[in-house]
Length: 76
Image (cartoon, rainbow, N blue to C red):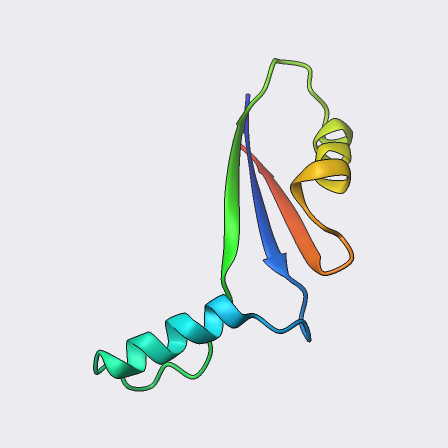
């Protein structure tokens, strides 16, 4: 079984990497990019029988800093 975990900074948390990307795109001539939020995608190869609760526990304990980040899980 595979799972994809997407981790993003919560709204209201400053995203300096996203701002750097937005600025660089503007400098390269890509007009109209008003905002960029950068996150991370984590793909997990899991043993059959791993529950979504187990995956959420992984996220809460290691994969996401839930104080400033939110996450979503997609099972494939």
